[in-house]
Image 1 (spheres, rainbow, N blue to C red):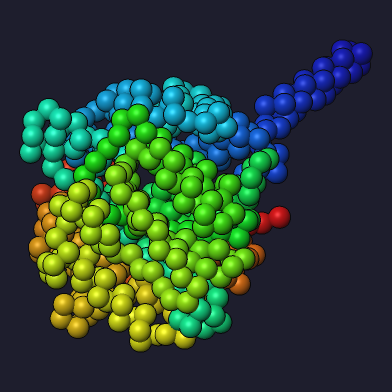
Image 2 (spheres, rainbow, N blue to C red):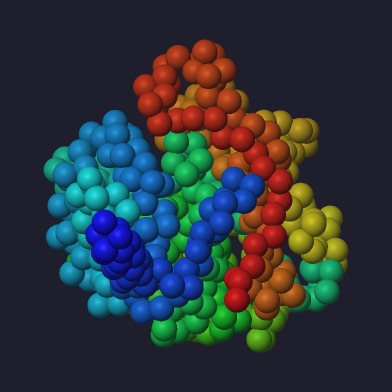
Length: 470
């Protein structure tokens, strides 16, 4: 009996050792990676070769990626009249062949880590590719296709997302670069835009950026890298154009984050074989030279401005007359448009705060609620911290109907001193601090209740300092 008991104990011990060894073998790719949840954000630290970075990402964010994929399959079918199969097929045909090997490996790793954490799911690399390129597909490729089928049928759905600035020299408190951005997007999407990715790749620079779960890029584009570069953007309002055999924007943006050490590098990477998707005004700064730049990146027209003393602002207006005439339906003389009302507000804020701009003032900018068309406080599509859900006119530039549940969903700011240490401030939810309560909204606007399956409360959290951790 004693011998049997001893054998049983040895067997049990051996089983436990074998089980632990298996777990270690399965999860060794997670070494040095981790996840922390803080004030509405999910911070993930990822490091290693591309496939391991992807696996870590997919594992740590598996529930959130699953949720995002379900939401997009639901929302995009309603919004574009195309099902997820269409987005998968389009991504596989146009995007996957254009991805460089390291980004293919990272995406494959995300899908692998996701399945390892959620073995009942059958997501693959094409789901993750379509997720990364959904804006390009939904708001650029679909209208392009509709226009090809029938002239005039392609509604101009290019989004007018975000309010941003970058400043340097005599405009900032210390004479060095400061940058701020808030994301405008549909709340059903934006309340999920709550990831801070700290990536240490085995090649290129370290990256810290905000992102959607499953993204290899930032997407709304607030990025600091270890080469001393920082960048953000706002979309070009009412843009039309797409190139099926071009390189997807999401890969170019990630490559720039990982490999650009200068404004010249950034421009070279972003303009290389552009597909026209997610056409933006990119605001970029180089900490080493204290220079800032603006790249207005259309499909046919691309223009760069640079300054060592001054500012660039973004609220979805284009600046180059040739681009406006050839690639948009934007009317730069219609002062009533939200993008131009916000532009006027940015210009006043810059002038009023010249020589004082720091991180705290930048936070106030991104939370600003003055409607420049009236000079009074408001809650609508004309203010930098947008609340289209409170606007009876909606936002025609966004193709959002009255009271559409969209607007600002989070904010980020940094300064040269912070960016040098790979740090930035971020606030999840409206930067002004106001909460969006879904139940009350649906009661007041039942025509949007179809979104209730995935649109939940979006509460505002405090500003939180994030840093690339050792």
